[in-house]
Image (tube, rainbow, N blue to C red):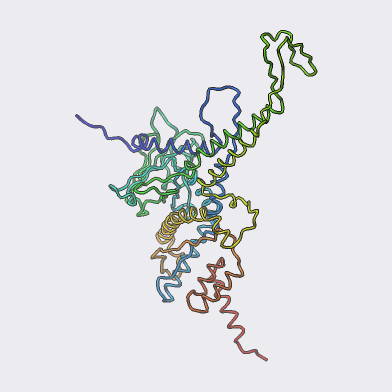
Length: 469
């Protein structure tokens, strides 16, 4: 009996169904679809989207002051020159690809879905490195055995409209279930993601360290050696689960508190509305033929019957509901690791150590995420420098190249900093030989410490030069 070998598009179509369903679930919840299904009609369902607020706020704190620097590997002038050239190259690529905005969008996507991804390729037309963030819902990965850190194949699936498919890959729309390849001179590996446009052609890219394959509507239209020498994807988890490749979203921890808060506030809103339009209660009345429901109506009640308005607010009922809402609200902030102070509510005017203690849950959450992001950004920087060395070697000063491709990610402080105190601390550290001037400039947020140092040296030289008569 012969077993049919599945093509790559057929394989990815059968992979990770639970993960993709989870992504769709998280995205819908973030966008406000937070009530479970119900058959009840005219059911009041208010949505207070704290899920979106907490995710957005945490992402803003996380991405504060992120930048990359390159340290020289030794004390030689050549190493310093190479480090400065690498740093400038990374800054130019970041500016050309608007990485500040791309990083924030990708981080927000990772916090919602649970995973983030970057793709680093060489654009032959524009002769520059292109950094994009494909939709992780179209990403599939293979790793070696039980070592999730060793990824040996990545596939990217996305949809292109007919015009884009023709322009990028020279293929016509589906014809009898097959894609028809058209000859295009100098066709290059794909550079753009077409998700979100009208679906006409399904594209699947398959990357290993040494091979690249391109499939369109189930037909392989290109296969070649991978000239990069590495898989040009950086896939990273939002929060890593031990021994697992794919990460977890920020949303599961706050899903139930958000739903319960919506339910409790909807119920409280209904009680207040009914209290403003009170319910009339009739006792010992068997017929309502002569009872008119209208303003100013006078009712004639039979003997032993009575009428009164139902007071839903008596006995402190509203306070009980409000207290319960407050409990759910505190639970939401606790599980989301986002204290109310993070939203600007600081009635006691906390500062310094007290503010650090108050925001400690958020600081710990941001620190966990930054550990993962630092590794991902370093890997992305390495890919950028490798591509520049391969395709634009003249960009390196004196032809030295950018190797060993090592960089360091610098993060800004999460809490407001006392700059005068920070300056004084760095002055003492520099004077005692613990920090270099360049390290101090980095800590103080100077954009280009090396250029600032060169200007300082020039000023000192000018001041020391003898004044000509």
